[in-house]
Image (tube, rainbow, N blue to C red; front, side, top):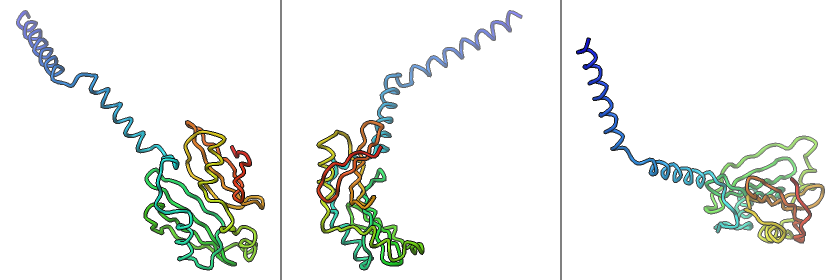
Length: 199
């Protein structure tokens, strides 16, 4: 019995010593914490939506319109949106003629035209959608002016903007991110007047 007890005690002692040596070779807990913090920061940077204020886009508002018009020459533009999918900025443009709606995405840095599509207008929209919602592109202010109007009133990161006709008025809707909160600011697209927010 004593031999068995000594054998078990010796085996336990051997295991404890072996486990202790393994811990001495592992990295100190501080490095693990630092690595976790660095990984979290890298992940946050990869998933954080970029701020349009800090971007230098190669393709301008007018360049994007020209690219759309090359593809759909007879379409009247009804909506333009600039947005980011975390990796790249893109213009999303919608246009119509009397019977069809057209859509295209234009990469805001490469000018590449993607995700094009056409869809027949509903019967009640035919011949009226163009008259009601076509943008007067030649007379709207540039997006930078709309953003400037918003930033004169508030601080935050610009998530993107949309240009369209809403309730008979041509507007920019500029999305501002302040922390975890997004607020849409409405700007008159003809004169740059800040009209309010759409929370």
